Length: 370
Ligand SMILES: *Cc1c(COP(=O)(O)O)cnc(C)c1O
Image (cartoon, rainbow, N blue to C red):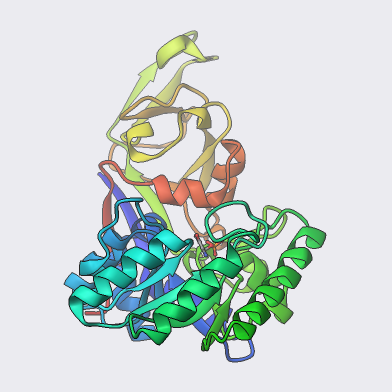
């Protein structure tokens, strides 16, 4: 009745398309938040087969699920609870993003308990103002890390940071600050293999900042990180198509109020088609009056209130019947609205649209690898 079709071959292709824009940098594929709503495990398996070098998630819990499913790639997790117990993560060989001294101390304890060296990536806040060590803490973090390396508890794999993508000037400041932070790390005697700073946006904008590894998120899913550019501009193919089947149609007369609040009233005798997708599935309620969906290649506007489970289209005298396929969004090359179109209609970004698709949608996969 409701299906998210996930094209894993498109994801593999997007990985290679993005990687080909670098000068041989390693590719860390970001699959946090259930692979931006695409399904973390099938996506991880496909990326492993497609030659991703690293997987990246926010939470250790996400990383543990990947290990439990037999994913052997290096995995980096960077967002930790203040009471995180790092033992199982280190035991599972998960690499940890480190933002402060407290993380370092607790990781060292866990490493000592396990007699296993923890692989860490030191995160410096170069201006985003989110996690990572700020300028004041950075020398202290470096000093502590140096001690723990000498004691055999940790290995510093990388120095990393994240851009704000506010303006080119702000990003260039962050790039300069990042390079200075890496130099400070070297000067503090820390031996690291990798620097990684850019996500999809920075990969496309700043070739000078690819360093040894890039972290690719939204572009993997065939979406543009920029509002002003479409995915096709970068050779990316959208991987998610959200569809449903019309559950019922009925003829009604003129002046029939439709859905809560009667935001739409029929102008004349017409057919109403009921679509079983609501805000519980991730179709934002504020798509009402602004989004378009496609049936048989024709676009209809969602002009009555999106409810929890369903919305209604006024399809006029068109031959729409129960069972017909409705595409809520997909690859615009196929003549259907894109996730960007829906995002614009809802005053948000494509990232939020795909990540929140779920509820009672069933996911089906094309190009699965086992
Ligand atoms: C989410 C995230 C990414 C991926 O960003 P995209 O814009 O989706 O490519 C990269 N790095 C970090 C630290 C993130 O949190």
